[in-house]
Length: 263
Ligand code: ADP
Image 1 (tube, rainbow, N blue to C red):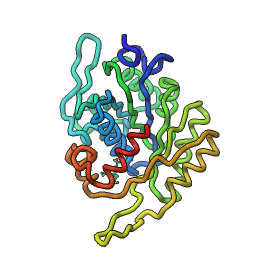
Image 2 (image 1 turned 45 degrees about the vertical axis):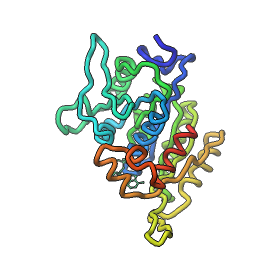
Image 3 (image 1 turned 90 degrees about the vertical axis):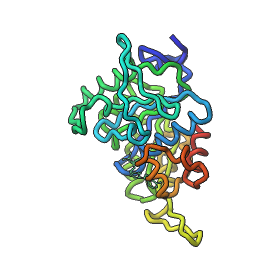
């Protein structure tokens, strides 16, 4: 068994070298999954060994964002995850037939996550991203129990109300003893044809949230970056080609790659 990969929740072992990031948000639709996928792909493009666990069981979207249509394969009692852009991906969506809604309760979610972490063969990884469901649900507690080393990344929009709900998602770290790696503000502005910036969702939410979490959690929680609105980011997601790979020249892709470099 490797130092940081393979079976038996090794990401958990004190000797594990894998950095684990649990990507959280207060509410849905703020770009949590899009950011998770782009950060993972940016790191993989730099030659790191990267995996994603799509733990957003109610709104699993990672496979589509990465253009993955193939199912995991089984070898003996192990599950081999599909690989896209060098990133190993496992999602609850890969085990659900068609587009059925997943109406699971806490204990089932916990078991599913546990199984992902034990039975899926990731091999040695440098970084593992968990795309959490929005809010502070059961799965965030499960992540804390199963992966106490996981650092939390909080995604928010510049809107004050969004920062309020996101604070709860980050503040769970005080209960679980986890580290908050930082805040990422998404949809920060739209660049206008004249070069000006339109702040569709207001401004300052990311900075306020980082400040508040620094106080709540008691350690420095940085604002890791601000990502503009970009049609190409959305189109890249729809097409299964993350913008950091498809259009690395865009300000959104540059901001995402910069944030990945800080992780
Ligand atoms: P969440 O995981 O928080 O629910 P998603 O990543 O699914 O959010 O994003 C919600 C929608 O917003 C998607 O259609 C996505 O393409 C779009 N989106 C996210 N971030 C941006 C952005 N910076 N610019 C344009 N569209 C974005």
